[in-house]
Each structure stands twice: as structure tokens, then as C-alpha cells.
Length: 278
Image (cartoon, rainbow, N blue to C red; front, side, top):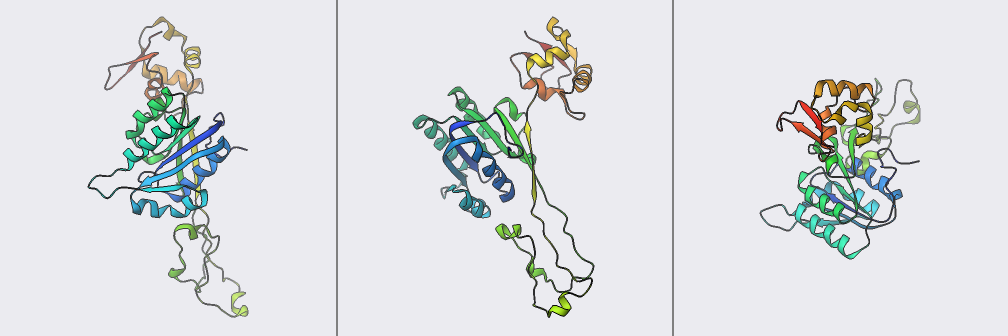
């Protein structure tokens, strides 16, 4: 069974994973990504994370668990994360037979890299926190996986006087299913009705693969577009929703911008019509 949010069509002989730790530095989300990519290739040749020392420190346990090499920024006035990642990604593809490259960042600065990698024949994936992704990423990546980390509510008993605030854990320890009891107590007291430990559940990751219908599918729902006459987006949106290819609250603009060679949006800055170029 594929991990939730994994592009099931993505398989490769060799894969490279490059992590922008200044952008994707949530340990739970990153752990989900690294688990997901394991089944996507025979071998992951490159596993590297780039960022400021404090960014890398926040995810060090996950990097160690998955054998990811941390690459700290040079000590200069400007952040060097993006440049170091791009240089290593280009070198990796030029010197190895890489089929898939996963860029773990929602930063738009990696768009030129994604385009270059696709021109070289690589399948390029983007993994990003949903609140840190730039607009229209699926126009540049073959697959985009957006991650939401959901913190579960703690189940606390009405009477739990034996726990102290110092029992709250951080980092990798946050995955422990139960908080430690601050002071040992006699068994008789521990079994008294109403006494229970606070349980901290592991945060869950909701991952969604951003995808859209093909041009052929769009034209099958909107055959009028084949006449190459402009159609108003409000009319188009309703038809696409009725056809099951557009979510109730989604905007059709993003869908058509995935296919700039086939569809023209007008006016450019605030489009309200779409025309099929043919």
C-alpha cells in the first residue's frame, strides 16, 4: 500500500532527495516524506538537507533516522541554502543516472531548477507544507504533494495531579505515546478511580497530491472551447464542478494555468475568460 500522498506512478531506478531545511523543517512532515519516497526507487542515491544550523538541529533526529546528510550554510551575511541545493542537484544529475528528483521545499526559488531537471528527462516532485507553497506549483513540477501536520487533542483525565509540566516532551521524544509520571506513587494510589496519565498522541500528517484533469478531459466537459471562442470563467467553473474535476471552492484559473500552451486566460492580471488555443 502506498503511503498517503505518494504519487503512485512515480517509480525509478535511482532517485535523489534534496531538502530545504529552512523551508520544510517540521520533523513530523519530513519523516512522512522520507518514509514515502523509500518505495519509489530501487535506490536513493542522494539524501541531503540544506539549511541554517538551527534549522538542521530542529530535524536532526529525522535526518539521522533516514540517513540524510546535513549541509549547513556557509557563515556569510546571506543565506546560502538555495544555491548549495541547486549546485548539488545539478551535479547529481550530470554525474549520475538519476530518474526522479524530489525537492522538499515550497520555495519558488527552485522553479528554474525544476524546469531544468525536467528538460534533462528527470521526473521532478515537490514536497511542501501546505502553508508554505508558492502559487501554481503544479505548472513546474510533475507532482506536488502538500503536507498538513495535524496536532491531535490531548485526552486529559479530570483528576491527574501526579503529572508535572516538566513531563512535556520535545523533539523526537514527542512521539512517545505516554507522558512520564513526575513522582512514583504507591500502587494503591495509582489504581484509585479517576487517576490517569495524560496521553500525547503522535501528530498526524495529511498529504494531498496536487493534480488536475488532462486537456482531453477538460475539452470533453467543455466541448465549446474547441471553437476557440472565449468562455466566461464563472460558467466554466460550474461545468467543471458538475463534471467532477474541480473542487467546490477551487478556482478554475489554477487549472488552466497548468496548460499555458493550450489555454489563454484574459485579461492577464485578473482573468475572467478562457480561450482554447488549439
